[in-house]
Amino acid sequence: MSDGQSVLVIGGLSETEEVLKAIFEPQGLQVNRIRGTAFTEKNQDHKSPNVVVIDADTDRQDRDQLQHWSSAPRVVIGSAQCHSSTRFDQSSADQYLQKPFQYGELIRAIERLLDQSNL
Image 1 (cartoon, helix red, strand yellow):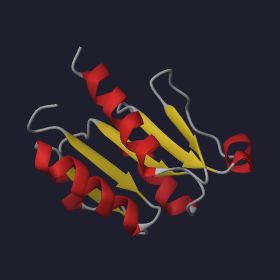
Image 2 (cartoon, one colour):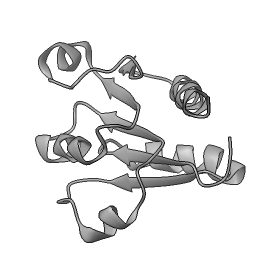
Image 3 (cartoon, rainbow, N blue to C red):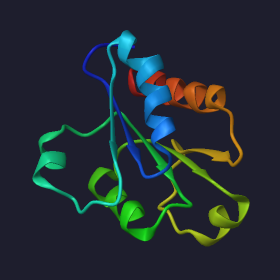
């Protein structure tokens, strides 16, 4: 992994952001989180993230943020019910984790997507 890469967390628990920051920021990755906010100029200033992590069980306002980073590979976290009822434009690059999940699973999924983006 290289400096300048970033992971964006949309919705979900603040704990997810904290864990990802603890793991990835010492490696030179930037981790940001947005939740419950409209798309703002501050968010526009950030370049497109290398990976987006979205909690699919979160409210629609948070899920709507995905449209701004539609080209970024995603890790979608949610319940089995959510995966079948929530519409995402599916990409072969997307990774899905079913709740309850382990942070190790999430970290490995992000690392795979970051490695793929470096090819």
